[in-house]
Length: 238
Image 1 (tube, one colour):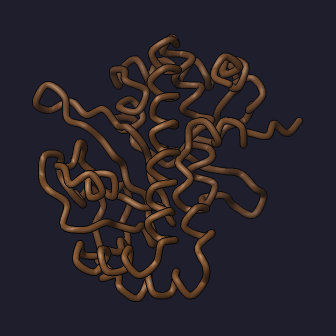
Image 2 (spheres, one colour):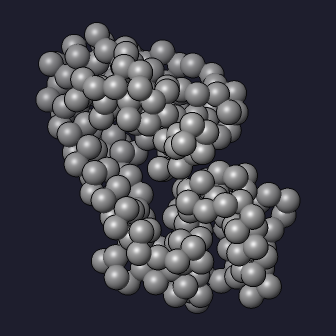
């Protein structure tokens, strides 16, 4: 049985990639031409909470975690960004400090558009300003839904829901048979769920015993999407 997880993606996943793709080709080309491509090694920060933006970022290749640092060291991962998504534009538009940090989860290629060039593009092309505003509105709705949903769920429910979301984010890791492997450290996974690593490991063991997932090292393969959907109990989120 195949379960369509698109409704979950609609509620818990940003749309900056498809929104950006919807720009006219000539504007996308001009936008891309202004980018300075930078290579980031796994674990490197792209920007840090509390600093001012000098421009915006575009993920050409790789995955990035947006997170806040709590109690001096503990991370709370807010979102996993992937290819085609924009970063740092909310703080840029608001002329405010970054409210969170961004670090690459894999070796990544990140495009950077400096503030001066972006302002020129926004003045020349209304479509770019509209794209950024539309992104901002959608992401606000997603974050509200995440907060409202996660705070009402048990850790087991949050783990199941996180699996469903990450399955969408890691679809580009799929093999020839369509299997999608979630490649994320246990610490990062726990920091998304908002629980201790030990608790997460115990729940992953339970999920394996229930034949819901399969692990290959740190990689995780979902084996029973319908049951995870039932455990996540997301019907109340729509």
